[in-house]
Image (cartoon, rainbow, N blue to C red; front, top):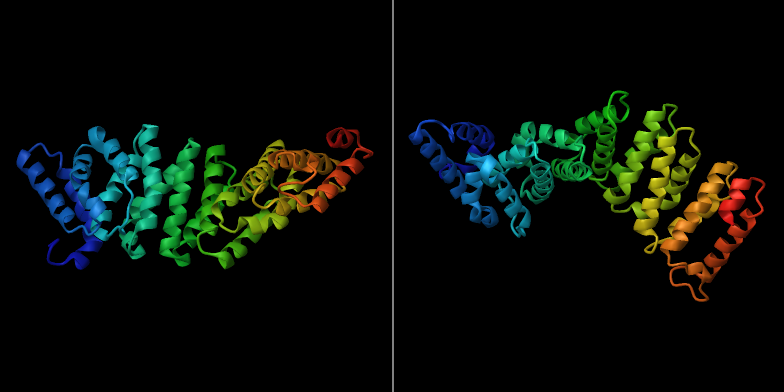
Length: 362
């Protein structure tokens, strides 16, 4: 069947391979041998040469995950894929991912999460992934809520790659599921951060119009009356800095919103808001300093003294990131005019009526 009707059989491969895996460790030696032979036949019609070259170790991992799984995952991660991954390849790789993500050791989970993102991005035909959604989605959801940040990050990347391949219409259900967890009162901190990271990757996966439509929700919810909702959606802003390719263009609009969070009554919201801006400074400070200088300068004269004080701290962080450009006769990253603006604003705040603002500006 694998030889005669590869296209027709591709939709049945998830069930076929699952059934074969269940008998690969059968007590009867002949049953084991027949199952391994059958999976080898599926492997023989693989069109992706990189996967074909690793068929032996993949089959060993499928038959004895405890002994060979990490070796197979590591080899796949180290491989530079030149060719796209086809349906027969998926039928053997997805069970490996599922097994790795469900393992108790963190190393297996981290490698499987990272590999899942790579595979989702390399699939030749996104429709080939549809038969595996019942396997992939529970695995992604499980990893997205892991206590280890690296595993959550890899799962979120995999979710973004999967969403991009399957299209917007297949993303809405997942978006609703993530939204529910962002607004939930019963989730843990790790689960809320995982949902925020997944949400950021998902709304970044379908281009500018889709992002613009959904980021408005993020902005509105960042000022929600509920403390936990504000914290959750401000965490989405944190992860958008690395997930959205054009985030640098959003800095003048979003940095003031981030800084406003520094005056929030809830400490957790203040912490994530400070982290938001510091991440932006680290990531975009030298590349696009003016996109950060302008909104921070504007917030240095906010009506709220806590925002003025925090903005002074952030300006010092930016100046430090720019290698103290403002004290140089010929700045490397800033124009002379911008340098003078920063110095003037800092000087003015040294005479602020609030002592804490004066001390930060001094």
